[in-house]
Image (cartoon, rainbow, N blue to C red; front, top):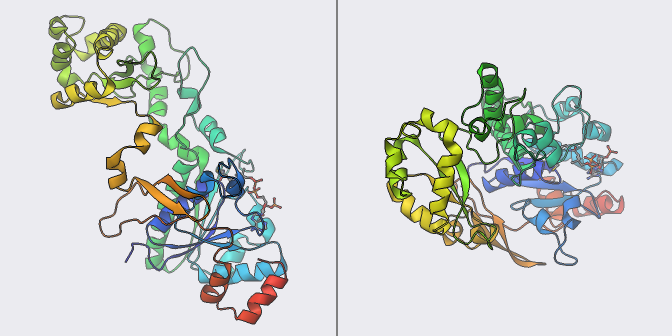
Length: 415
Ligand code: COA
């Protein structure tokens, strides 16, 4: 028995944000019926193709644990099938461009008429306001949500991050909204609308930068490197390179081999509680008591000196050696792990965080498993469906169409 067993999801999502959400619900045991346009399906099936003729990794890695039903929702018969699906499902999830569902004839009012218990969950780029009608992709959300303006180095341009905080991050928010709405429905018997806007999701994750924006009114941000370098602050939260966001200064430092290995680096945090141990490890025991270095406040104008000295030490060690030496001393450090290293890490395979999946067309590939582990509902990753693989099964088993009716639906071009 899985946590969401018995919950049926009408999955009208595409690309990344919505599929992330429904994949999570599938991992928790929901029956996810992915509705795709006949002939082409989710556009990502054929984007960034690495094995000719097969579904791309872009698609397969976002659509595990789902069934695929092809359906033309603009065809009259297709609309009738969709109406029946709305009546049979608990949740409709979509991330079309604003207005697309209304144009199909499935407004929120119509959906409530068909099924008052339906939870209708949407990802949009922006919430209500001046930009609500815009189409949005990941990097637009990172830029509009405050992440890009605060990522990168002060003397460089804004940067986007490799973490898909706009798409996958918003998908997580949407999934939480859906389970919360399901929980409320237990008490009220009613469905509701759930909206997760990508700008809101990114901004929410950037809260420490909004915090710093307000702190700027009361003086310079002393933990930022630019303070120690004597560079005045402007009006907005600046980019802070690899400075750590909290009150415990940290940076990325070179380790042995950095000249040829782009990932021979470590993150190193000068946590106040272990300052003495840091001084001993890097061979600067005199800094324990020196007036410019002994306290966190005294160190702030000298962070470049502090990290230069630590780096002289980390450059003599590999990133793993730094970890082995510092961890027993409770000095927080973290190696910069490449995708190759993560893909090969046995412990991540054991926990199901990285999973090997077998696909009939493309063979074996790696994907990320469920990042949230439930002891009573362990997630088992099953391969993504082929386009329309479950169309007949869903028409007959879920919607109870007879064989004759299914042939008529097929003849109408709806599936
Ligand atoms: N049958 C018939 N028509 C279908 C269909 C189906 N099964 N599935 C989709 N369509 C139609 C839609 O109704 C829409 O038609 P319309 O424009 O005539 O109303 C059309 O396909 C295109 O949908 P749209 O969502 O506009 O796709 P797009 O490729 O042009 O835009 C996004 C893609 C992601 C930019 C856009 O969907 C969007 O902004 N989504 C919200 C934000 C979001 O989730 N972004 C992150 C994506 S990772």
